[in-house]
Length: 112
Image (cartoon, rainbow, N blue to C red; front, side):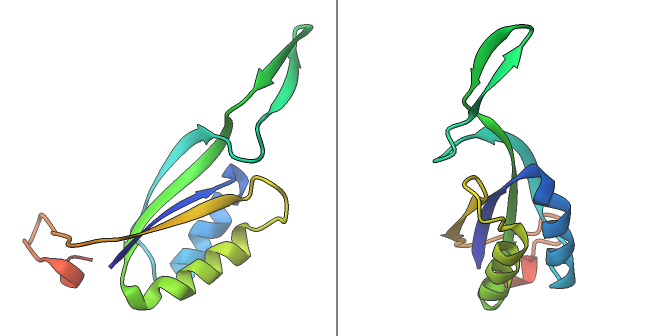
């Protein structure tokens, strides 16, 4: 099992969610977060005052999937979320040792 942490632009969330749904991925968690990488934010003028905005809004999607689905999901997310501009996001991949479905007590792949 693999856990993906997918960080993308907020405007790409619905497209990515729809694409994952087409692949049969129906369970996920998402959070509205703020952060920066190479993009390093931008400056804004608010009521005549220039302010540096270091942390930009992003969406973090977390999902756990079977090893066999990994490459299909990665390809779909990258193709859907890519604009070619700095700030498109990142995907972090981790191994999941075990999972437990609380309702039934199922473990491992059966719990997904």
